Image (cartoon, rainbow, N blue to C red; front, side, top):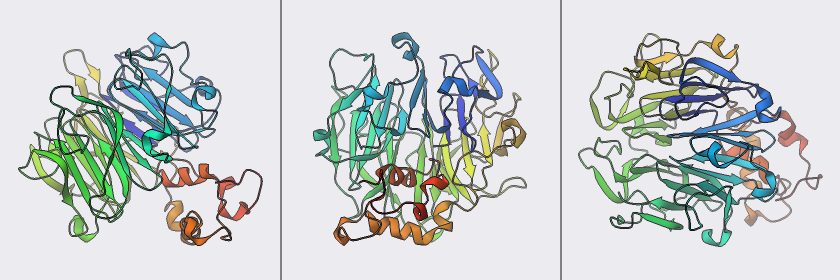
Amino acid sequence: MALACGRGFTLFATEHGDLYGCGLNDKQQLPHTSFRSVALPSRVARVHFGGEDVAMVAASEFLGAAVTKEGSLFCWGRRWTWYNNSSRIDARDLGDSPVAMADCSCETSVAVTAAGRVFTWGERFTFLPGGILSGFQNVPRQYFDNKKIIKISCGFHHTLAIDEANMLWTWGANDSGQLCMGFANKNSGTTASPVRIESVDGSGVMHATGGRTHTMVVTAKGSIWACGVGPLNQMGLGTQTTALQLTRVTGVDNFGGCGGRMTACGDNHTIFVDLEDRIWVCGSGLYLTLGFESVFCTEPTQIPDTSTFKNRNVMFASVGYTHSAVVMRNGDVYTWGKGLFCQQLQLFSGLGHGTIHSQVTPHLLRRELLLGANVGHWHRASWRLSHRQHVHALLMGITTRLGDQCPYQNIPVELILRILDDGMHFEAKYSMSVIKPGAPGASR
């Protein structure tokens, strides 16, 4: 995604391929800076990414990651530099396939390549005995019934994957039932191998995210489901704080009658984006992360408009421990939450406004702080909205039931992955109008 909130820090990827970071840096969460915290967004020199354009970023408790438009993967943060000489991952370690997306849990990094293969590195919940791995390890495809994985996401200590058939797979910590298996591993606490989670409403899974002890799932029908433990009402299930099986939060009958599109999970709260691009929140407002004056929201509650923020045209949301952020359709960024991550040590959080003051409501990040650039690549009405016929052709072309004669049957899988991922850059060279069936490199 083009923006990622971690534990007290934020990473931004701009339309020009630059990476910026701000906030806490006590575990080297911000790449190539020695300051303990950074008040304003700081640009990371392009040379640190081999001169390549950054297309998406990921952040967690102590780790950060970036994927370039060329498909290279870079990782940094706690433990990474202890066990690796370079933050750039050798393509040979990833099956010589470009990386499509990556994410981070507390101390684990996960990547999925354009070929649909999953690779993982980290101290816990790996597929090799012995703990910490010095490099990425492939999760064998047979663990996923030989399906290609098209999307991955990490919670605090668990991982979620969506395959090409839109089925959900989970593995990692399950002490709170966050793996959606119907029970919690109170003793062993972990499930090392991916487990397939059956469909809950007869449709595929389009989006899944994890928090510290809970998981949120969005289906193709726009309904949102939760499982795990949410003692601060971060699952949005009202007074229910435990759900060992996926339990419906809302559907097309809520969110103003339109349903949900995505979620972002933090330790203490969750943000929802509905199909009309508005944001809703639930959970604890202890750290001012809800976007308005409230101590608790037991169910999804729409963030109200203010004189400086209109709750519409939201493209993407991300949440950290003490702050929240959204990217708007025009490339603007709004952040809110605590101004200082640590009051005693005067360590800034990831708001990026350059002051110690907290923001109760969404506050616009000044464009000049990013040299006038937009954050993200799906702004200006979005490619999907301006190319409806091409979207329909894409969906038809990847449906093998239509047969090999479909003119869009041979769309490159890398393009499909980039379109499906809201945060990826969509360049003119990937336009449907210039991709001809049978052209060089056009393969499924």
